[in-house]
Length: 166
Image (cartoon, rainbow, N blue to C red; front, top):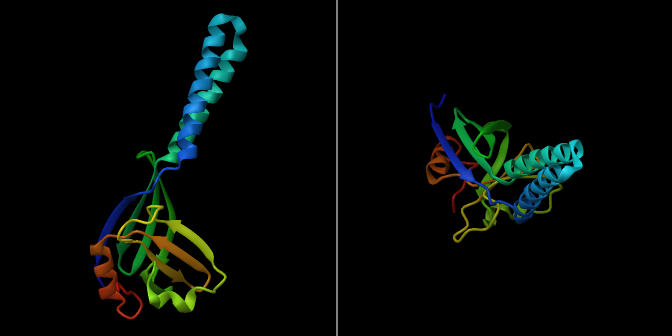
């Protein structure tokens, strides 16, 4: 049994829509509180509180980070919202992984026409050079991640026939 342990934290690109929606909801919450001051009473308070809470939750959804933890041939992915709320979203056993390679690798050509469920736990955009990796899990799931070089090295040592870094 391998005693490899590597963790990696990546920040996903925030959506412009979430940023605009958050600002709009905070603005409308402010309008609700101002209308309360002008005499609309309870309706302004309820409207202001609801819109303020909506802005808070939309802001949390706009700031997403992913933490990859590789330990003993198992990769777990945690989703962190606004650096405060953590949730385990997936756990993958490396024995069930078919192949792992960079996004634009020729080794993935045989897998391109498969009907799979696509899951994206990466940074969300194509960097130069592109350091995102794809792995196919149990034939039904295509997972996109952005691991560090150390994580790729450890995974390649544990699974040399499945992990490629060309």
